[in-house]
Image (cartoon, rainbow, N blue to C red; front, side, top):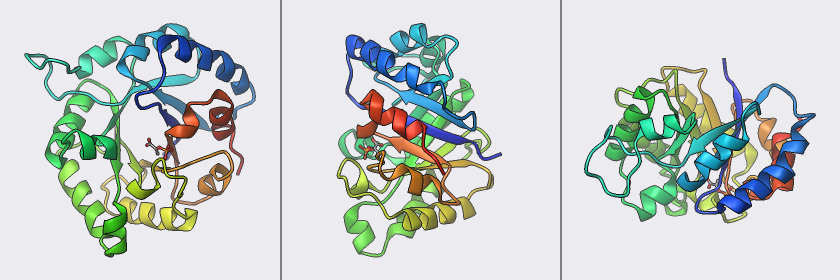
Length: 242
Ligand code: PEP
């Protein structure tokens, strides 16, 4: 079944104190949130323990923003899937465009991370999407199909979420038109062996456009950067109405 998931991606924001402050403002606003949606917070590694200790019994699930593919080893600065599971993490963002752009992430390393995460029982949120230049050149479909083809080799599609994130819409305020996001996500779905996969849209999702995005037939949720940092804004997103 296609599950609706609203996930926040905090990127490199929030100290421990700021995380606690966020929860104080956010949690009371979930009292009337319908049960038909899951809520995930993908936080920096240093906040995961804080979230885990303070979210016992809550409906919020915890996500990380990256994971290494080895189980352990001499990889200074890296974190394994088992380490994430141990602190209560359930989801992990893999292949975010910021990692592809700034940290040398390739389809090959994305594929390795996806398999390692799944082996440890984590559910990856795989990000795919085209740049402005690629869209303008009419390459959107080709780029996304290539990412899917390489990223998903030997990956279990039953325990996976995909986020369609056009790079030009991330952090720019330039949201992809909801009908266009719906079209691309429909194309992504047509390439999957599991057509019931949860596929999110990400890219400048805000309280004033979430209802329209969530009304689209192919879109099963949102991956949200900027608007997930403010407890009032993120509460409006998880309390979207269709
Ligand atoms: C993201 O970080 O994945 C994202 C979509 O960011 P924003 O919502 O700020 O565009």
